[in-house]
Image (cartoon, rainbow, N blue to C red):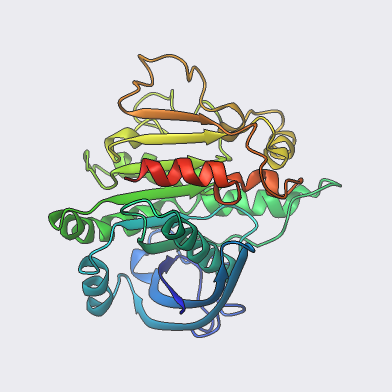
Length: 318
């Protein structure tokens, strides 16, 4: 049975029916939220035990500027909790959808109450090129620029989600945000822009999960709600997953001229409970969680490949 993934993207769309080639790494104008494309995709062949992410078999219900009324009704009335996923670097549009589908399925397979969720993916214009040795930083820096400049679009997406999330909560359900890798940089820009543009506190998500964050580790201790310092005003709880054994982030630190990444050792001063009250923040060290096919690339994917880490994430959603 195919997995349904609702999506929004700020990519310029050349052919909405073609997930593989119709969504190139080109961004719509930053001040044009009406140009954001919304729709639904069906992903076939997801298999959690074999780590098969499947393929996009169909795209439908395309709409500009917001979800169609049909999609809004389906999401609001599905009777499920909601998972919103922001992918990292090295993800094409098709990759973003299949990764979202895989995340939905491993959560549902956990058996934990409330983890059979409706998933929505936001795809920013990553080039889909892997950063590896020898270091060729051009593609990485392209993605970094795209993620950072997607903040206004992602802010508009959050604003469109608000009434949907109110309906979800009215039915006694919950909403979780999952940002992976450079998706945390896009989220950082979103949170900053949210408050810069006069938006106030809003419980958009019950929990925000930041996995292997590829943004600076000082993102939470900025003044005036800059970077991620204001995230706790948009989410009831913030959970940060990090690993000293994340080899991809070690390379990222080199490309970023030695700037430590959030996903390497968590945020600066993470043990300071005045800055990170345990009732609002959770820190999870995943350094030792190598209970899967662990290598250079997969060291950055523990949140979805390590059975132990998946179990911790699933339990946090109950």
